[in-house]
Amino acid sequence: MFYLFYLEFIILGIIVGALTGVLGSSGVVAVVPALIIINSELPQDAIGTSLLIDVITSVMVAYVYFKRGRVNIKKGIPMILGAIIGSQIGVRIAFLIPAESVKIGFAVFIIAMGIYSLIRRKEMQNTKDTQRLLNIKPWEIVLITIPVGLATGILGASGGIMFLIISILILKLDIKTAVGTSTFSMIISASSGTVGYLIAGHIMIIAALIIGSISILSGLIFSRIGNNINPLSTYKILGTVFIIIGIVQIVL
Image (cartoon, rainbow, N blue to C red):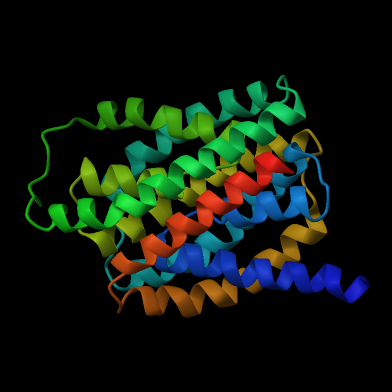
């Protein structure tokens, strides 16, 4: 049982690194359900732990994309500011919501992300012909990403997928720069949420360190792969997995 306990963390670390490295996505969709369903952890503990893992993983992944010139810091900063504001509000709200409600809310969130992932292929293909940057001001991006921060604080979703959506559909960045920029933004967003959960004592430090350490290696490998492959078909698989995980969490 002891070895199975740590084996779970190792597998989660590999999955988190893959999600972040290839898609710029938070590992929350894997970590939170696993800790809740398998280890029967409180949703708040699972969410806080997932945020710390995202911080650890995102640093390495963002570094790889940055080295290849695929992080647009100028466009990432307004997203970060909005996410910080929202996350600090969200963390405070999360502790006022019953654990079961947080669990169901997170499951619905995963299913919604799964549905979006299934249709992502078409949207990403359309962006190839619409690379013109929209005339949108930085303060408008801040306002747009405040809800992302709220999701970070309440659901532990450090914004990877949502930052990616904004980067592609609003900022019109190419897919690889969008992944790099969303991962860069996710570092600060997740850090902001982590602080709130850490102060409240809702982070499993050992689990976060083990999963995070493995995810660094996994993220380094998969971020290099992600820079060289077409990720469109991957979203179909991820969408299906997200929906299944969400349904399982609701049922259990």
